[in-house]
Structures are given as C-alpha cells and as structure tokens.
Image 1 (cartoon, rainbow, N blue to C red):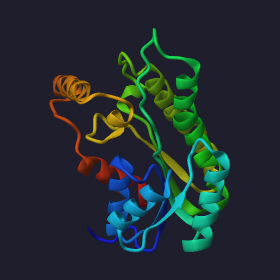
Image 2 (cartoon, one colour):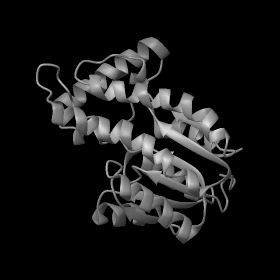
Image 3 (cartoon, rainbow, N blue to C red):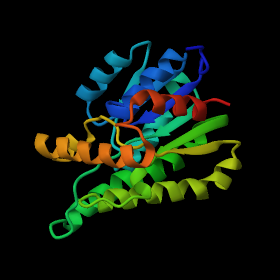
Length: 234
C-alpha cells in the first residue's frame, strides 16, 4: 500500500461489517482518516477497535434521516471536511412474493434506496472539492433472483440515482461511482434470516452462475478493495 489516501477523510455508512468494514480497513492502511456510521454503540466500538488507527464512529441509522445529517456534521467538525463518501449501508431481507407484506417492503426501500439518496444529499455541504461519492449497488441490479425482488429493485434504483447525481454533484466538483459486486462472503444473508442450509445453497447457486458467466468463483473483498481505491482517488 502506498498512502494514496493520506490525510483524506472518508465517511462510511454500513461500516461495521462486510464490504464497509473491509473498505474502512483498506482506507486506513492507505492513510485516510475514517469515520463510520453504526447502528449501535456496541457495533461502533467493535468496528473501531478492528479498524484501528484513530477511526471514529457515530451511532445512527440511514433510515433515520436526522442521524445521517448529524453523522456528516460530526465528521466534519471532528476530523475535517469529507473527501470520500461511501454510502454502503444496505439490507437483503428475503421477500417471497406470496409472503411479503408492506412493512417488509418499506423496510428494504427505506434502507437501500431512501438511505442511499439521503446519504448523498446530506453529505453535500461537507464535501471537499474533488470529493468522491461511492454507492453500493449489486450484480442483482441487472439480474433477477427469486426471493430477492425488492432488494434487487432497490439496487437497480441506486444505480439509476448515480446517473442523475452525476451532473448534480458536478456542480460541487465531486464525482460519483457505483460498486456493483457479485456475491461476496459477508453476513448480510444471515442477517436477512437465511438458515445455514439456505445460505449454503444460496452461495452455491451464485457460485454456479458466476462460474458459468464469468469463469470465476465467489468474489473476494480484495478485488472490491482495488475498485474502491480507484474510485476514491484521483
């Protein structure tokens, strides 16, 4: 690692596990000052200890708009205006067509779409010139999968947001990119209520798809981190 993000400020939602946590660690190794948004103090403390190197955390939820605004304000006041926004928070609750109700539908949309939109909106006043905004979508933004229709729809919407945000953020000399990873070994499926058996079957199904389409197995965080470094630096 070569310090490509030295002294830059990175604000990450969904930074306590999975891609967000791995990104926070990678940013710190590159010299960035990292702040994460965590849903509980317990998760915040655990993630900060794991990230190390002066990382800080704020407690909030992207479905709670005042806490997003307070997050960016706190970051700017504590470690400086922001160079990298990584709007990564998301959930992948299962939505079986015959079983899903309005509450479950609204929960996913609130976090994945509404949360992503306002994670960008509230960051704008605190962005440095030349800042990078990164949204997490998914390979499912273009692929259908039974039981994940609402999740996939929100991720397609996130990709669409980026297209519209491009000229709007350009007014602030900021740029935006979308990360659309394939299947990554994280806890998001277990959090969504997948049993161990279902999780293993889901992982194997995705491995089969990606082996056939791209001649590669389950994605690793390393390749995603390389994309993150490219998006985060000029």
